[in-house]
Image 1 (cartoon, rainbow, N blue to C red):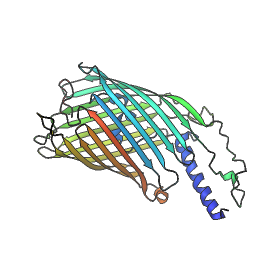
Image 2 (spheres, rainbow, N blue to C red):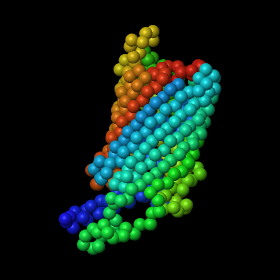
Image 3 (cartoon, helix red, strand yellow):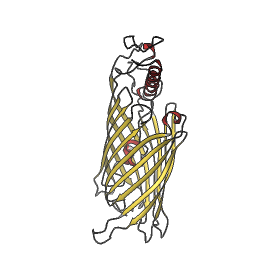
Image 4 (cartoon, rainbow, N blue to C red):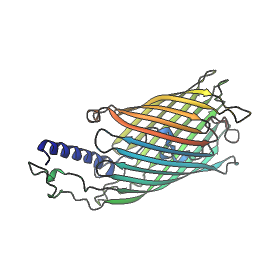
Amino acid sequence: MKTIKSQNDSLFGKTFFLSVLLVTFSGISSFAQDIHFSQFDETQLQLEPADAGVQHDVRIVTNYKNQWQTVGSPYKTFALAGDVRLLRNKKHHLGLGLDLFSDNAGDANLKSTQANLSLSGIINASEYSKISGGLMVGYSQRTINVDNLEWGAQYDGMNYNAALPTGETATASAFNFVDLGAGMEYSYGNSEMYISANDARRINIGVSIFHPHNPTYTFYGDSRQILHTKYVFHGNAAIGVKNTNLVLKPSYIVFLQGATKEITPGLTFQYILQEGSKYTKNKKPAAFSIGGYYRMQDAFIAVAKFEYSNYAIGLSYDVNLSKLKTVSKARGGFEISLRYISPSAFSKRLSGKSKFI
C-alpha cells in the first residue's frame, strides 16, 4: 500500500504536470501556445510558408526533441519537412512545401499531429535579392488520455481513492481543426564563402501569421476557447570574416501569441573546415558551427552543427533558467536535426544571377 507521503507526492506531481499540460497545450485556459523547436533555423516551414523553395531546389529536414526528462513523463516532438523549387528555369518561380509534426506530452499522453502544405511565390527583385510570399493550409488533430491521472477530488483527506469521481467535465478525448497561415520574406545574398575570399553577406528577414481564424481549441466543447493568432518575426544572417575560415551567423525569432511572448536571439560561429573542389567532385566542402541562443526568461540553448556537402546534422540542448529550474534541475531538452539540401549550402549560386550561399 502507498504511504500518505508517496500518495501526496504522486498526487502533487501528476496534478502539477496535468495543469501545465492543460494550460499550455489543450486550450482549457484562455491561451495556448504552439509547439516549436529550439533549432528554429532548421524548421523554417514552421516559421514561414514564404520560405518554401527560396534558396534551394530541394530541402528535406527532420527534427526530434526530447525534453523535461526530470519532471515526469518526457515530452517528445518529431517533425519532417520538405520543400522544392518549381519552375526553376524561370526568373520568377514557385515553391512548394510539406511539413508534418507529431508531439506527445506528459502523463496524459496529450498528442498533437499536424500536416501543413505551403505554396510560395518568389520574385527576383535584383541581382542579389529576392522577395517571396507564401500561404499555408494545414489539418491538425489533438488527443488526450486521462485514464491514468490522479485528481485532487479523488483524495479523501487521508488516501487517494480512484473510485471517487474526478469532478472533471471533459466531453471529448479528441478534436480536429483546419489551420491557416501566411507570410512574407526578404532574402539577400552576394559574393562567395570560399576561404580565399569569404566576404559573403547573406540576410533573410521575414514575418508571418498563423491561426488568423482562431479555431476552437479545447476538449471541453466550449467554442469560446480558441487558438489565438500567432505572429512570427524572424531573421538570420551569414557574415564572412574576410580572408579567414570564420563565418558569423546571428539570428533571432519572436513569437507573439495571445498573452504569451517569446524572444530568442542567438549567434553561432561557423568554421569552414575545407573547401569543395571547383573542378572535380572528389573534395567536398565541410564546416563546423558552435554557438547558442537565449530564450529570454526561460533557457539558454547550446548549439553545435556539422555540415558536409549537401548534408548537415545539428545538436542542441536547452538549459532551463526559469523558475521551473527548481523542479527541472536546470535541465531542459535535447534536440537533433538532420538536413539534406540541394544545391549544397556552400554553393555560391542557385539560379539566375542571384548569388545566394
